[in-house]
Length: 145
Image (cartoon, rainbow, N blue to C red; front, side, top):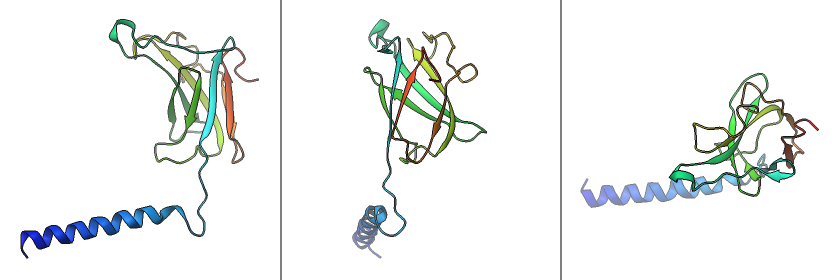
């Protein structure tokens, strides 16, 4: 087989694969995914970090740890305190109870402005996600209610 013929065959195969991948979001059994929306506040205000401080990277993150173990899911919280959560596989967060860690890094990863109070081992925040859950509010001053 010549080089041009092989290259042409590869292009056709690549085109067919991309078409097949695009057809995966329809048909029997397909459920449209819903991204979990949320907001993290403290004292009624969103947690804010100074992203320009000493040129170091800073961020607020929320990490959802399933109770009983399993894959955790992290999300970066925006400057207005909001976030859109989906798994690394681009799927909605599976139903279940989650312990939610919140870290306010400035700079990252050496200084948590929350002083570890809401890290994985200390957070009092537990949220139950059901198939009907579309939005969650996390108030660090009232972690469970």
